[in-house]
Image 1 (cartoon, rainbow, N blue to C red):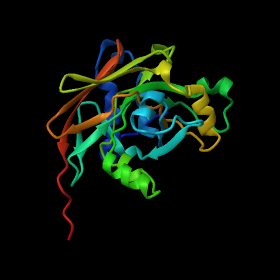
Image 2: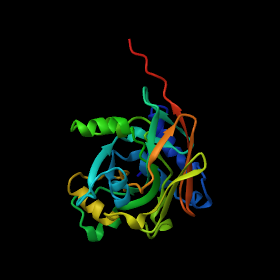
Image 3: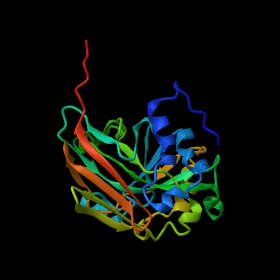
Image 4: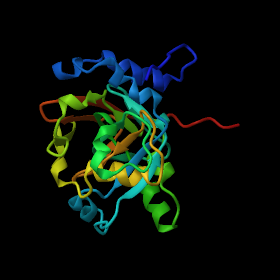
Amino acid sequence: MHLSISVHTPVYIRKIAALSTTRTTATMATAPSSCQKLLGVGTKIIAVGRNYAAHAKELGNAVPKEPVLFMKPTSSYLANGGTIEIPHPLESLDHEVELAVVISQKARDVPEASAMDYVGGYALALDMTAREIQASAKSAGLPWSIAKGQDTFTPISSVLPRSVIPEPHNLELWLKVDGEIRQKGSTKDTIFKIPYLISHISSIFTLLEGDVILTGTPQGVGPVKAGQKITAGITDLLEIHFDVAKRQKPQRN
């Protein structure tokens, strides 16, 4: 579980590993360094779409009968306090606050009854979404990768150990934009619970140490623009803060 950090380590990995020294709340400060290093060794982010019925309905989607899965690269991670970048030529991104499950060990074909043994901890994450790109991709039958996986599109807290969250299905998640509440919901309202998700996902993809499952977002998703500030949290446990800015247009020869 040891993560070796050097000047050659990618910047986003160094920033995520450095989260172990960030004290968002007193609870955060108690999290062991081994938990903080999990994100740095993960190979993938698997997100669960439409896992709250009210969110599925607000976007005009049917409530799923089995998990809707998509993947995001770990290069999309953004450490607490960072700046979310809106890529050119977009004017906004949609925010989606989610409970992240961090896997502690290799998991393949895991029975639902023992699935929680593979959880190393939890984090709070945002699944930033370029909704215009996603809508165009969906209408054309194309993947969502560009809409979901760009740099800074997965802002994330440091990792809380399992001992801090003994019951992950009764957490209040919330998100504010410029101090105004946008999202507030409870993980008790998820359609597919964590043991089922781990069992189901591990029957399709082998999960590795440090991999993250984003468990879905409650209703209230909406746009943020450059100059705005996002604050999100798990009530009584942690808060995270991010600025929003326009990304400089890449120069191409």
